[in-house]
Image (cartoon, rainbow, N blue to C red):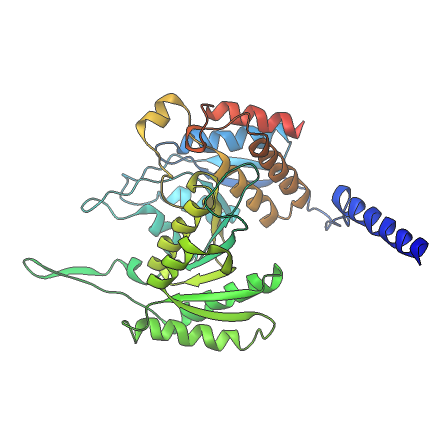
Length: 365
C-alpha cells in the first residue's frame, strides 16, 4: 500500500511539473501566425508613456502585431473619421486614457468610442498580484459592465432655468446581452458565481428590467450560481469581504463604481487590466478608469505605472489568439512585481516607467 501511495504521489508530482512547464500545446490554424494590425491611440497625460511601454515590450518579444498610431485628445469634439475607420478595419485597438472635461466642455470621447463601435461589454479583472500587499487576500473579481446605455446615455436637458433632467435609459435588449456575456464569460473561464448589482428597490422599472433580464439568462446556465446585491450593500461588502464575489454584472454607472472600488482593494488602479468588447471590435485599456490620465508630475517625471496596460495587452494577445505570447508577457510582468526591485511610486517605489519596461524585457529574454 505504501509503495502504491508513493508511486501515485510521484506520478501526480510529475504531471503537475509537466503542466507547469509545458502544458498542452496550442494548435494554431494555418495563417494564425500572420502579424495583426492594431490601432494605437496614445491618448492624454500618461497615455503616451504607458502605450510607449507596451510598444517597446511587444517589439522586444517579437509579438506578431504592429501598430497603426493616431493622435487623439479628449479635447477634440469627436474621434476623427480616419481613427474610427482604422479600428473598424483592424477590429482591435489599444488606447491610453482620454481626458474628459468635468461639467462643461465636449462630450467624452471614451463614451463616443463605445457607442459608435457598440462595445457593449466592459471587463475589468481585479485580483491580488504577487508581491503587492493589500488589505485583503484571495481577491479575484471580474466586473462586467454594460457600456452603452444607463446614465451614460447622455440624454440631459434643462427643463427650466435651474432645473436639469438627466435620463437613465435601460432596455431589455442591452440588459439581456450583457447578462448573457457575463454568464458566457463565467462558463468559459470556469467561474462559479455571477452576481447582478442593482438598485431595483428604488428604481423599480429601470433596474427591475435589468434584474428580470439577468434572471432569465441565469436559467440557461444551471451550473453557474446566480446572486443579486443592491449596489450600496455591494460597496460595503466589497470593502469588508471581497472574496465572496466572483463575476459581477452591472448596469453602466454602477460598474464604474464597483470596478474602481475592487481595483483599489486588490492592489490599485495602476495594475488592473481591462478592455471593452462588442460583436465586431475590441478596445483594450487600463481596467479601472481612475488615474488613467495621471497628472503632470507623473508625465514630467516619466514615472507612470505601465503594469495595467501591459496586462491589458496580454488580454489583447489572447483575444488575437496568440496565447503563448500572452502567457510570456503576463509571466514577465508578474515576475517583476513579485521581485519588488522595480516599482513605481503608486506601489511604494521610486522606479521610472522605463525601469519597469527594461525589467520586463529582461524577464522576457
